[in-house]
Each structure stands twice: as structure tokens, then as C-alpha cells.
Image (cartoon, rainbow, N blue to C red; front, side, top):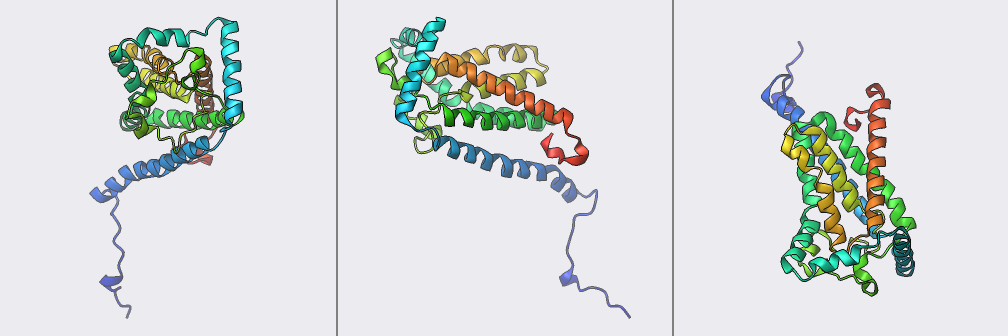
Amino acid sequence: MQQAPSPHLAVVMPRPGSRLASMVGRYWRVFFEILFIVPAYVAYQFVRGNVGGNAGAAFDNASRLIHVERQLGIFYEASLQQLILPKDWMVDFFNYLYIYGHLPVIIIVAIWLYASHRNNYALFRNAFLISGLIALIGFTTVPLTPPRYMPEFGFTDTITQAKSYYILQSPKIVNQYAAMPSLHFGWDLLVAVAIGVNTRVTWVRRATYVLPFLTLGGIVLTANHYFLDAAAGALVACLGLSIAWLLRRSVSRKWTISFLT
């Protein structure tokens, strides 16, 4: 006679349709996303912080970029910054906009997309990751000194005077010569596109038109980036989004994990 298995050896599994099975199915993807994105972002910051750190080349490249902007007639960053320097409240506004209007906003929008617009979440997540990889090529090949380290051209460093700057931008992990391209602008542009595409609220959609200009003000008026940095960041972001869109269209779900697309 076959004996019944000992209850002490039984493995309890959630029954299909049970509340526990529903919770497991609902939250495994959240855990997987966290386990995927957090290490990817840490790796990005580590690589970014350890490439393109040639100070001499960075200053030479910055001088060349300023020369190019002068030739194009768009070198107004220092002049525009001079307009806000006499007004402390404006300096504080753009400092805090630069610090808190980037990574915290990205996290909030990512959570919103995942919770309410799952069909487009992976598209924009992939766009961020792909554009980050592309940007690392720029950081490696074109080290660039940000304007705040170029006082001879009329720039003033305002951002490092804000103590909260060091909370999200620790000098230990941030490469001070990784200004080209500006993913601060490029990723905020992706945020604006993500909100504009997925929201049904008219005033919110219209507000997304303003977000890139606010970001541009935040990176330029704090002397962290040049106009050409922002243009390069926009190009990289659009390229990342295009590749992510092609990935979603061309890669069959039969041959890939649905999490990718």
C-alpha cells in the first residue's frame, strides 16, 4: 500500500485563482523591474563617472565648442545667466529646478507609466536605457568642461553653492567632464514626450510643451551645460526612442521576453 506523503515534506504553492497567486502575478514584474533598472542605473553612473576624465582635453573641447557657438551666433549662455544673478530668488529657483526637476521627476513619471499606462512603459524605459548607452560613447570620446568651470567666459558657478546639490550629484560618482551630450535635457525631453503621449488631460498635455524650456533654463542658467549640449542630448534621446520603437515593432514576442517590449 502506498503511503500518503508526509505533511512535513509538502510544498505549499498558491492555487491558481487564489489571492496569493494573484498577488504573486501582480508584483513579480515590479520586483523584476527594480532588480533590472537599479543595477543598470548604478552601472551607468559608475561608467559615466570613470570615463572621459581628461581635464586638459575637456577644457580644450569646451573652448572649441564655445568657438563653434560664437560662429553660429548662439553663444548667449553667459549673458542670460547675468540676467538672473542679481536676483537671489531666481538663482535659487533654477538651482532647485536643476537638482529636483530631473531624477525625482523621472522616477515619478516611471511609476505613473507603470501603474496606469503599462502598454507604453517598456517603450520609454528602453528609450532611457538605450539613450544612456549612446551617451556613454559621447562621454568617453568627447570629455567636456561645463560652463561653471569656465569663469573666463563670464560664467558663474551657482549650483555647487546649493547644499542639496551634493545629495543627488555626489562628486564621488559624477564625472564633472561629462557634459556632452546633456542627458539632463534629453531625458527630461523623454519625460515630456511620455506624459504628452499618455495623458488625456488637456492642460497637462499643454504643460509638457513648457517642460523642455524649463529644463533648458535649469541647465543653462546654472552654468551646467551649453546650448549645443542640450541639442546633442535631444538628438540622443530621440535616437533612443526611435530604436526602442523599432524594437517593439520588429521583435516578435514569440522569440523574446515580453518584458522587453
